[in-house]
Image (cartoon, helix red, strand yellow):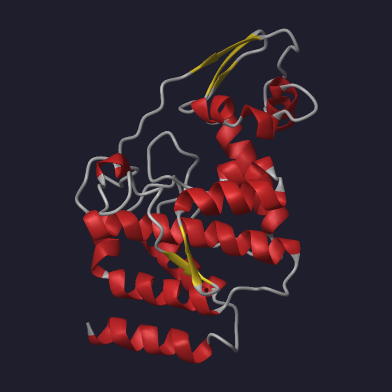
Length: 237
């Protein structure tokens, strides 16, 4: 406990001297595998550190920052609060098992404190990340703590590396055989592409978007189906 308190004190002291992204990266590299599986039991023991990072987020919104600074901020915020939601209720089999007081589910709970107001995870995703930034790659960056979600990257998103990070996430997700089954003439895609079809194909076709990242060239006339979504917790064994 003394170590955790010391870390929080240190985070607060250096918040204005260096990027807080490094602090989230520390937690992610310690408790998230390269495959995106999370050691929630270990993270729960360091819950106070995660809470300390979240407090720094609340105090360091880049209001005058660039588009990439703000986009990275909101992605990190979404992922940090999702981790905290699971940690607060762990052990659970699925994030859907969380039943918060005063909200239908964890995504509707207004508990994300930024700029003096409270947001829900759904608002961060739909009203900010999707509506304000109009970048479909964000769907591969935010994580819903479930097996079928795009993997949780084990480093924070940063303005300097954001486009590279988002492209890597998109490429990794599209070519992940456990989440999408891609062939030249037929594809079985994640439900993510069905739920947010308008984001992925505002002007062209969905296959145009997938083809941009797919290692296997897909015919424009390929048949499309969708795979079941696995909401089991993305927990490290």
